Image (cartoon, rainbow, N blue to C red; front, side, top):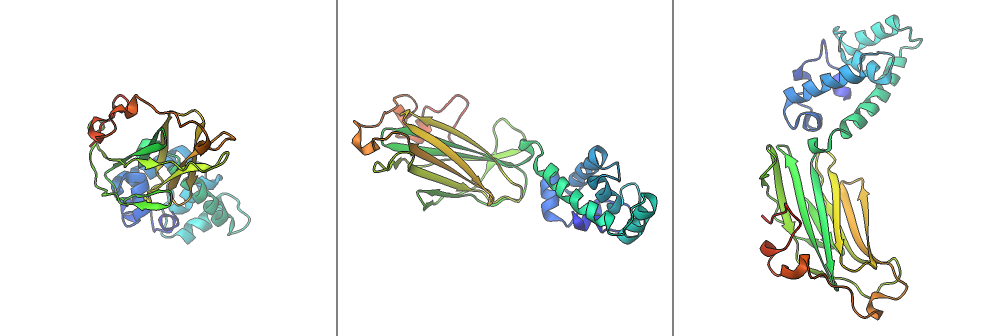
Length: 268
């Protein structure tokens, strides 16, 4: 964002064409689309130069032009009675912070999004992971179960019902719950990291047959999510007469292709 502000003359698409992360976040990798989205942000939030975002767009040259950012700064001081030449810098720096928040909070389907589903039956559990993104730069996800790294072969294919969206599903093998835990302790931990250039949107779906097992979700700054199954009774799970099993979704779990998944789901 600072590089955009320091360009010469009136803003044009060439000013952002080499700014990888900004183009990915605003334009799905297409500079022209990213520039159009930046112009929309100017229209919606930057027309008043006395606001922080407005000061940023003024120094960037929107509606002003001029040969350099220093010329625009001097014009800002003269036109808007800023008593100090550092005032437009301070306002524009705050404006950058506000714009970054606006960009990150855009519609979730403009960003990569992932569904983390977890099913429990008896002393076993099974995760199902769905990754979705548009045509953009990407990094493969990392998956850990109880701190053990799981090998996933990440490649995507077109979504069957959403044009322009690419998807990948992983039905992970069943794992065993820990039965020697106490109240509110974790019986299993699934951690999924997806270090995409744009912060992913996470969704969690859980199906626990045993109502004594709670599901806890946490997100992390390193673009990761953690889902844990926790035991919520004073008597340890190993001291009860077995955990509740589910005869519905898990009835055909031997073959992932015949799993009785919720309506609309498929295994690819």
